[in-house]
Image (tube, rainbow, N blue to C red):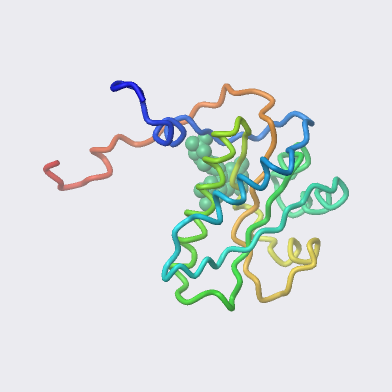
Length: 174
Ligand SMILES: Cc1cc2nc3c(=O)[nH]c(=O)nc-3n(C[C@H](O)[C@H](O)[C@H](O)COP(=O)(O)O)c2cc1C
């Protein structure tokens, strides 16, 4: 890497944006597996790996899933939806398990970006997790963590902003 080049990991962290409009191009199995694998390699407390993935590509199932969120059009537009659950049998601490799933989800978003895909983490759908479990045939005890909509981005003009670092360090002399 050139001395002044931005490291690709940092570039992805900085430039990844939530994508909510997709082309109809399918996601090849090898790319989908690479994205799930990035999630699999996330850190977790005691390496308990509490995440479980349900990959939805079938249009009828995806349409059924879409009814459970006000962002249903995002799910319908995406060729792939990945529902992420916690396996209660793998869990050991509510906060740490949720943090691990967050790391897993971010890994998948970054991998999607790195491979030229767009993705968005959908959390609003959690309010209807019973419906999501019914659509997917998941056991009632498995808490839904998020749905990731994934596909080739229809456009790449998304912008976003963050609070300045100084505002996140109240009282720090750094
Ligand atoms: C926990 C969580 C829940 C989210 N839920 C939704 C959602 O339901 N619908 C949606 O369109 N975006 C959702 N997002 C995406 C955020 O809106 C987005 O990450 C944020 O606005 C920053 O934009 P960026 O991802 O482009 O940087 C969610 C993100 C997170 C981390």
